[in-house]
Figure 1 (spheres, rainbow, N blue to C red):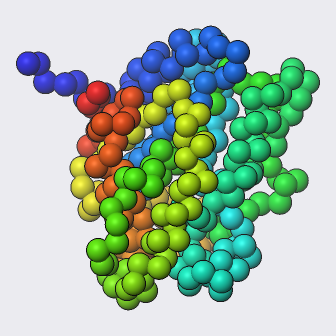
Figure 2: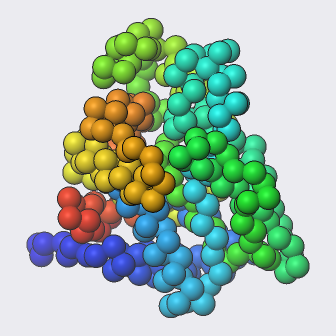
Length: 274
C-alpha cells in the first residue's frame, strides 16, 4: 500500500472543492458541514474551499461560521444566572442562537436574485454579537452553503452519559454534571440543521496538546492588532477544557460519520484519510 500524500491546505481545499462542486445541481443549494477542533485550520480551509469553488468551478458560495451565531453576552449572562455559571462562556452547544442560524439558512434557500440575506457577525474580543448594521449581506441565492464550526455535526448520542469530571474545570465547577446535561440536551435543537448536510467534512489533529498549542497561536493572532493582552498558556488550557468532552466525542464519532476525513499534522499538512 502506498503511503497517503501529505497536502498543503490549499491542495486539500481544491480537493474538497472538486468533491463538493458536483453537488450544486439540485433545486436548493447543498449545505456542506465542516468541523475541527480549535486551531485545526477549519476556518482557513473553508475560505480556501470558497475561493476554489469560485475560481475552478464558477460557483457562488457563502461561508457561515458557527461562531457568528453565539448568543450575545447579556443572553449568556442570563443563562449563567438561570442554568449554570459556566453558561456565561461561549462555546458549547446551548450557547448559540440556533433559531437565527435556521432563519439565515432558510433565507439563503429561498432568496431570489434581488434578495439580500444578512449574515450575523460575532466580535470575539468584545465577546458579544455585533450590531445588525455591521453585518455583511449576501445577494441572491448561493450555489453552495458552507457551515464551519468546531462542533458542527456532533449529536446527542455521540456523548457518553455522565460518569464524573474529565478535567480540572469540570472538577471545580461541574462536579455533578448539571452544566454538561444542559448542554447535551441542547443538541436536540441543532440536529435538524445537521440533517441538512449534503456532505460532512472533519479535520482531526494529532492530540489534545495540539489543540492547546493551536489555540495559543490563534489567541496571539486575535490580539496582535487589538492591543489586548492574549491569554497565557494556563488561561488557554482552562478555556479549551470547556470543549474537551465534546472534542473527544467528535474525534471518536467522525471516522464513521464524516463523508471526508482529513488528518492535520503539526506543520499544517493535511492527509486524506477517507
